[in-house]
Structures are given as structure tokens and as C-alpha cells.
Length: 426
Image (cartoon, rainbow, N blue to C red; front, side):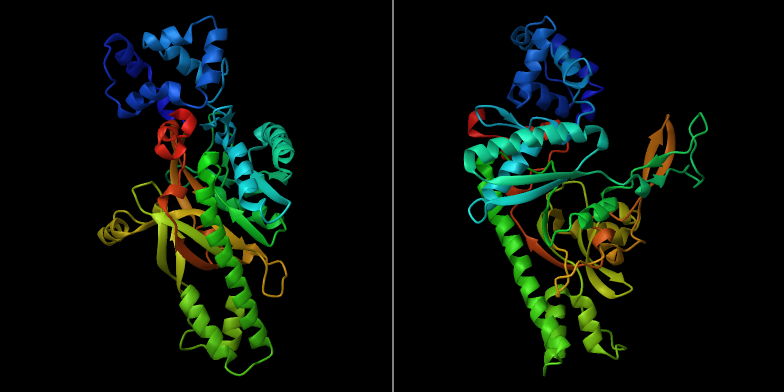
């Protein structure tokens, strides 16, 4: 999130000494918008405690003390702090982190129809106490103001899912001291965390994709659309399941037509038992994915993919595609939609029993990435991504949602976008 600021000395000097905009568009935007960030009051307080006058520093365009106070352990330590704990928005009374905004969004979504709900976060073990303390205070505030109760739980990625780093020629990588290196295997490793919630219906969203409270009603409209579609699908699947199990007249043709029209499945010509085929495909977890139009954000999107089960709907990351293939490049350039911005997931079968989510993973859908350790190149293997290979054999429905509900924060400057501004910023 702050990567571009770690090497900002030259831009800072250009800004301060030449009284001119730095040549880097990123630094120009960040320096110009410094006082608009929700964390600026806390940042200026740190600078003041260090014996400097923040207002004078801004006036003199001397922003290096702010960068140091923001990123280093001598100040706010945002250089290593998880996004979920960094203030994103200001509601006019206080700043709010993504964790707090997600909890308030849950309250606004569900408090009109029920009295309580559960929210689960997957976090780094080093920061779990910080998340838990903030969640406890936020939940108390929400309940005191609205009467709505939120049960918050946390989990961490299982170290057993880590993968070994290799050299570019695929040999195990060893550090200068001779130790092997194991790396977290990407968000696809969290499929077991999802299963461990024990829930039947789960709404999933990245922690950095959150909007200010005054904009959350628009997001929650689409949560209701996506969640409502999931419930309707579950009811229809139960009806087809029941008709097939009692061998009702026309049940096989009806179920096969539903699977084709809704999920794109159809039995092969060699299928000798369409009833069993249909039952097997109804007996799967379901996901309804809210997809936005592709506007150039980095990432993959929805594709038809040839699998061992025929052509299925998949979400494919660009890292899984051969960008050197002209046909692939043309296909990607013509793609219309982006990765899911949120998902509604049904985790039980038509009989209401828990499904083993591990059986629906495409273990061949791995991702190889290029990284570096100790200045030396490595290749890192990531398990099938959560919405890529880890959910490859789920029953999938894609739904277009407006781009206003997708406001990710990949760099700090994203917080200056209109989707993250509030009336308090005006």
C-alpha cells in the first residue's frame, strides 16, 4: 500500500526545493492530497510530538518528516501495519479503519431483518490481538448505538499450507545461512478457513474493498441482490434434487435443462446415466459472484474453461495465462469483466449437510510468481486462488454489479478517489 513512498527522497527534494511538482504522478498526487487522508490528524500529532510544527512543514513543502512518521516504527509504523488497521475514512467525528467499516456495513445490511450476525476475518497471527481489540471496541459501540449484536471471530492461514520457494531452475532455495524458505501459499489456502466457519451461507469480500458509511447503503443493495439470488438458487436446486431422488416424471430432463441454462453444464454424449450426472452436479457448493466491468484494474476475470468435466465457468488470474501467446493476449484484451468484488456462497448440499470443500478444488490451477529474497530471484508457488482453482468445481453464477461497489485500496492514493471521500472531506 505504501511501497512507492519508501523510495521517495528524490521526489520530496524536488517538491521542497524546486517548488515544483515532482515528476512522479504518484508522488504528485500523494503530496498534494496529504492533508485529506483520514490518518492525517494522527500523523500530524506524531510529527508534533517529535518537536516539529506540521502546519509549518506543509506550508514549506517539507514533507519528509511526515513520511518518516508514517512508515517507520518511530511513528505510526504503517510500513508494516495490515490495511485493515489503517484509517481509511473520516466521518466528521473520527477516523475509521476497514475493519470498523466492515462491521458497520454488516450492521446496516442486516439490522433491519435480524438482531445479530457473525463476521469472520482471516488475519496475520502477529496482528490478531490488534484486530481483536479493535473489533471488541467497535462491536460494543455498534450494539450500544443500534442494539445489533455482531459476533466476531478470527483465523490465520495454516502454516501447513505454505509452499517451498525455489530457484529459477526449480531447485529448493536456501538462504545465505543454508535454510529452506517456505512462503504463504496465497489466498487459495484459505478454503479450509472458509469450511471451518461451519456456516451455510457466507458473504465474502476483501478487507480493502470498503466504502465510507454514507455510501454503504448502495453497496448493501447489491449484497441483497447477490445474496437473494443465492437463496433462490438453493431453493431451486433442492426442488430438482427432491424430484430426482423420488424419480418424478420429467425430473431428469428438467434438472439437466436447469443445469445448462443456469451454470452452463451439460452431460457428454457418452453419459449413460443423466440422473446420476445431474445429482452429482447439484450436490456442490454454490457461489454467486458480483462482477464489475473491466476498467484496467490489475487482475483476472471470468472465462469459459475446458476442464476434465467439460466447459465450465471459471475465474482466471492473468498469472495463469501465457501472455506470450498472441491468441491469449487478444482474448484478455477483449475481456469485459474483472475478478469478483464480492461473493455470496452456499456451503451445504441440498440435504442441508456440510460439503467437503477440498473435493471441489482444481489442484492443477496453481500460480507461479517471480519474487526475490536476499536480492536473489526465486520462484514462488501459490495454491489455487480462492476464487480461481480453490472454487473451480463450484456451481457458479456471474452477476454484473456497478463499479461503484468496487473501491479497492491497493496503494495509499486510492484513498483519494471519489469512492472514498465523504461529506466531511468537502
